[in-house]
Length: 306
Image (cartoon, rainbow, N blue to C red; front, side, top):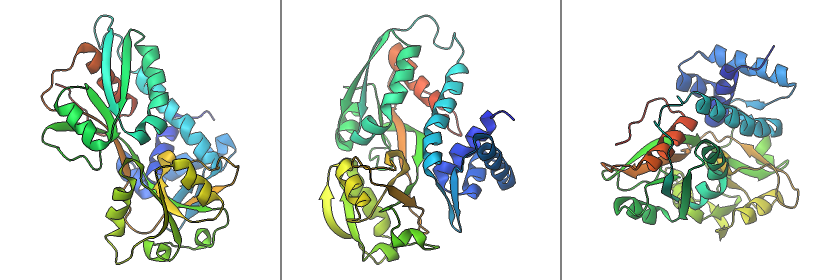
């Protein structure tokens, strides 16, 4: 039996939500349809893609590897569905795009590679800024659009956004950490654990949003801008952290294993989105970029660019 695009979509939705029920709701299908798709997919690949738990599912190492391929498949299908005449005649020019640190490192490379193949005449100039600077650059017109973390977007009146990806946040711990073997884990269970706080790209601000919903505070032993420092320290057992699946890698630079577990508390996702100034008239090159990005990560509702 050949792999189907339906199975790929069901797999991606389950991986991103961490729950079969949530994936079914997102795609407007039954839970049994999602479960059947994943079972067939695992049988076809000959690999276990998810670990099942009472509170949801988490990706195995093979699942993490396949997720990258699944996103590439989804994006390729979206590219193929574009009508050749969608943008009219050949488009060229320059487009200025603001990005945040996390987006630049973990989201943009694959996307830009596909865009440049589709539009070799368009030059994309990336500008890495903090969120406040991204918003200012959109409002004053120094950039055409932005790909950023939209969860903390401030000026929603002047800036429009389109959600591209919801990346679940999960507990990261070293292999065989006792927390990984518990049936359920909540923030209360983490409060006494040594906690490694990533501070880049408003990560600490985002973390405190869900901690502040509890009477607990994380036992922070180290704050750092370095993703690789957090990864290495978690992998060697120095502490735990909560970060998104988008930045998760199962191994540290030293080759130590990092495992993840879904928490039973309501932990908001890390949302990556496309943003542009409300009412702005986009150039042909900027419009081509925005429409391409929106198609590469199709959401539940269409988007209109002025």
